[in-house]
Image (tube, rainbow, N blue to C red; front, side, top):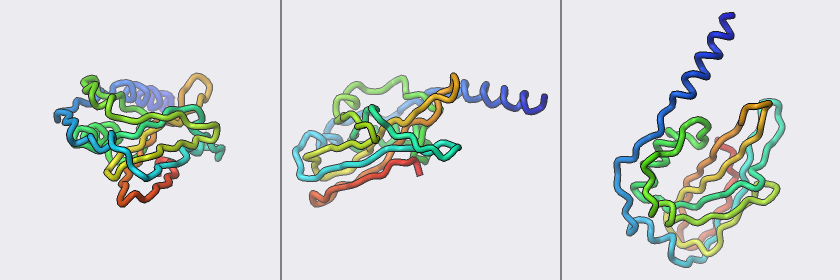
Length: 162
């Protein structure tokens, strides 16, 4: 009975997580490096390991490359709370549409692999989703990795949330 009460409390609290509010203003000039053609490639693979040891890939998920502006840094800090996995925090209600427009998107292959070509030097966030169902419950979450492209050097990521 005590275990049931604790489980119900956890579920109730998880449903109470409020969407964060972003206080800074999006400045397109801080994000403009994403519009330039560079020579670097950011490539990677996204996956999570379930509690039973089975690896689940981000197959078919969208991966997003976002320039690391002040606005993006605040948004990522609110969503990921100092970590690299977001399982319960809903996206901000007040997302500036220009933030969404100044991002690049690609679709992961069947093994969760993704590639962004012709990336200019600058700081970015790479974000994707790895989820699966356990009964009626969605498991997994959103993954984020900060990336710095310097001198046209290619970047290879393994996104596991660690």
